[in-house]
Length: 623
Image (tube, rainbow, N blue to C red; front, side):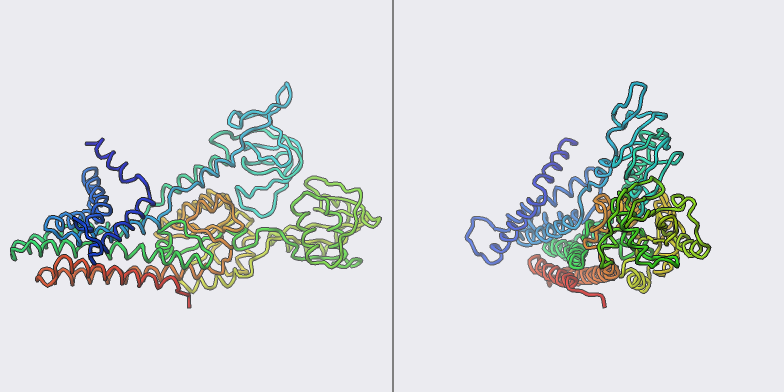
């Protein structure tokens, strides 16, 4: 018996969606031929629809009953099909089969298949490591690295395992783990994580966590475990299927018993078929997805909007989501002997040969904001973890941290002014000219222009915004104050974001997560709904999410929230109408007013009305 079931399952899966579409087209055409008697055939053309659309439904019902005694809507449909055929009502049987298969296809088209996010994350795992032995440097597979091995990491390479720097200075891009917008300077004694990228400067490290214990492997496990916990929503028709089948069979049997007319019993089975009920949800979802697409959202999961309508909290990553994700020069301070423009010009000139992301940001901002061209710089020198020096217009210029300035005196007033920016989580670059402090530049991530209005609109929809960020508490607090976000969790690693979302869910709240980085992938999977920034976001974040914001216009997020709630109201209206029509048709069938064919046509009209009501969502706009 088991082998027979396996053969039936293989038969149903053969051909996939293309086969289903072809069967529906042929089935619909055959029903038209049958209804209007367009082509003379030796048999009723409706049999084509019965075989192509009805047979798969009957097979599904048999498999469900035999393997798990699982009563779904297709059980009642199968009974109605078989009963209609037995009494010669072929058109009614074909029509019911066609409508049910149309609903199944719509549902299939709205449900996403398996995603490749985890596989892409696996590809981030470094494949090789450069270990140092008594016989020199040797490249080995990363999985063969042992705790205590000495490893050399060159500029631009991904760190293969977790460890501690033994010698050398560099700057590490930790966005893969923390989402921080700015690179972090590292030197001997500092810890580094696998999967993060060495920006410049070679260094040597000792391996402390390898294989499955490394940071990148822990990230992969987080994504896998979070995805496994997200259950699919069961279709409303299948949820009520057992009761529908019992009531339908009871009503048909009693009607046959008291009236003695089997045609009335068959009509009850036909009109009891949940055609409009099956179409109520997928048609509304597809129309809402079409609307969302016009507003820049790519809905990857069919039931994502259904889940989104129920969320009470939206957790935001900061960098690249509420902010632009790239450091900008946001303020300039100058000592009395220099102007702000001179400080800016000297800093940009000496940084123009720098490979450091902060140096590149200064030069980029200067070119965008200043009408003057870059000054020429000579004898450029980069000092890792400190800054850069060079000769500009015959003067020695230094740009970096206080360690680089060494014995250059810093006035109390300037130190206090710069200290305020440091408390806000900004980065301060000091500029000295001929060993005299000229001033400083402030670099920070900048808030998107539309973020404040978007947060306010979310509040009006009754949803609480929450900030989850890997940045420092001070930087997070500044962004929170600017945007009106009161609930803030800073210094979050991927597992911390996962814990915070899990805690909300344990309290009975449904959570939406919005992020852009690889480090957000586990949280996007764990949340009831994950929304990724598709334009600036990583491919892995997009693959982990249910919805991708293609153009990064987060101002459209309130529209998406309101659309999801409108979609649910449309679905409830569809369900109420379809159930009301069903009960009315049943009453008429019991009294003999409706026959199987007319009952099938009434059902058809109900299905059309449901589809039209759902289609109104396509052009809906938030008021």
